Length: 385
Image (cartoon, rainbow, N blue to C red):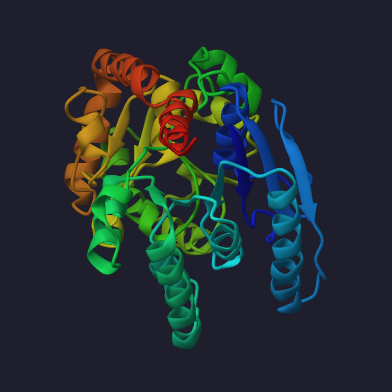
């Protein structure tokens, strides 16, 4: 079937497509679909499958670029939809109404992928009340008039159904996934040699964005309790974001800055080596900030695909994966002593960690790869053929 995939990726000039987009679009193609990708002409996408690219021009000036992109996008999408009529328009959610307009004009099913509770995210980065109100208005227009919504977690599905006038049967949650060809078990010595980490150290690590809901402040609070028993433990926090300076300062305030390494952004190529260099992978999300939304976090699946033991907050969408499969340990990370005790236990009982890692790898390969995720979505899309 012919799929038109429309998104705004690249406005932040990150230099590379979001991994979720790369994997999903590539798998849509590998599964036998004729995939056309519509995106701002800012970064050049690279897919490892046959994908027809439609790079939409824009005027790259503040404010104007959003308006100019929507104007050009409307005519690009309209022209190509008339010339090569797609079976569906697949829209990775943003504030644009362009896919909805084309969908209504040409009676083409519109599928919207929802990756997060964006209103809260925009509030966190300082959007004004007017902008939030405007975004919510556009969001409601899109949600009410779409053919199907595909949120990435059951928590998001529940929130959408509670806050928008949509039919539950048209909202179907499909989890994120991981790429087991990239994220895979690598021998500890090889991983640490690649990123130049002490091969003999005990390492507790995190990789991801540096934002309040990721909860690294709770890891820093727990670290002195770990170090009181195991003084040579190293902590690695790989990533960048709004909280990075605050976390560095907190580690210094606690007098443990020499036990913490903050390498900043890590490339996709090096990310598996970082994860495989950790004795324990941590995901100390702040439940108060993410509990209502729930999670389908790619970071968790990447950890699991590397076969590493995981310690996490008991967040909705995570505990349902780790708990029943004995694939990780969950703890109240806001209690620093409890958090530290779980970390110390795993470091001093490596066989327990090995068992958790093996279970995590087995679980992710059986249920949470990008191929499986894309097959589920493709099966949903084929109902419109």
